[in-house]
Image 1 (cartoon, one colour):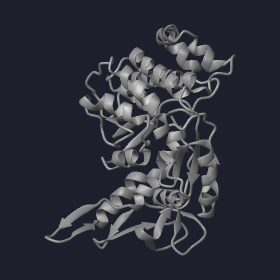
Image 2 (cartoon, rainbow, N blue to C red):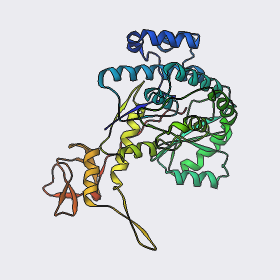
Image 3 (tube, one colour):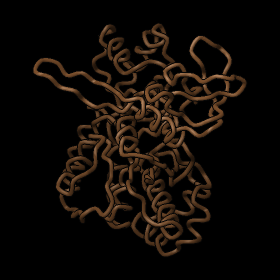
Image 4 (tube, rainbow, N blue to C red):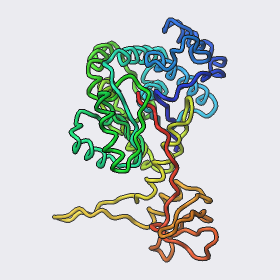
Length: 370
């Protein structure tokens, strides 16, 4: 199976979309007419230094990613699933047939304008600690005013709030062993501080009619497929709710053998997916055994083997429990004696149990924020 994924704000760069604008002149002209400025000039030259301003960034990214989808569709057709990170969700809905190119552009134009006019705030990426650890440190430091904006990967989270509060959170996060990276944003996106923008957007989106989706789209808010009746509601909620990217990718991985293709500028989401896949491979597929009192969660060895082989090719660099030097796999995972999930490694004559092997960590890039 195949999923197309679309990036959000933060993936833009000057020069993006050059070949796409040439390939799709009609869409390019339509975008420029609707926006009131040349979309190709903004993306390719950015003469007025506006590309990184939210009200310009969002239409630019939507246009480039939508054209990338149209190019991919001509070459390889539609995917089995679609997903987008924050702003990228609008491109996914366009790709699924829920909205036209023009309607999607109208939505993101309005969204970008409202978010750019929202009260000032700040955001920061927090690496190397879990969501529960982050929530604890915020609580311990009386910083309940900070919201979680993006759950990008198992240990990459973006927080959002008032500028002073974000700054005050840094010492506690670093004391816990986390890495704190202040992001270059002017607003507290995906937080309670976007409520005024959300209210205005809710009024605007009531004028939009959505068509049935021909391909499932995973919603940021729920990490589950959209239903035709809840598109407006979820897009409104998305403005103040966190992007559940980790859970979204885990849902897609749970559907079976899944291939992801990022359509749009850069490969930020591709890096995140790789990290999520690594963590997901360590979690066996679960089946529930129930009696009258207790729900036990068990996994079969065959499920562990299947999960590993669906995620990692031969030659993957891994770490072995109790060792500090990485090595590479020289076989797929196999089931030994009907009950041992195992794999063979280079420079070793015997096999290793999958529970004793883990992929070397790939550092995740910081994903888009809006």
